[in-house]
Image (cartoon, rainbow, N blue to C red; front, side, top):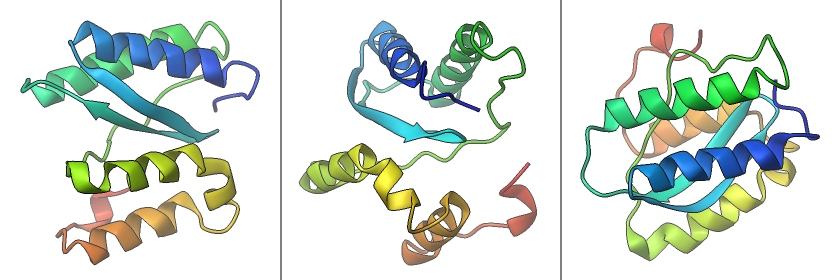
Length: 125
């Protein structure tokens, strides 16, 4: 779990990893059990980017919570520039938003809304 006492430092660390990939971290925010990032990346090997993002930030977070680990899986979506401001606002308001809807319900609704096929067996670890 991500504690409020070190979450802002984690978000800065994640932003540094994004910059290391020559990207721009537009917004980073989350909850104790997950994080949302809106980033602008150059074309890249995205699975390698995610592997580095998760591995390096996990090592950093273990300094604050030795039991910390990210889930095995992740969700990634492209966002057009026409809705980037709306996504950024959504990410900024994570705590308020999740007081009304769980992450799991939100994620399933997002997949369904955009017609993303999925097997429920592989959604949660």
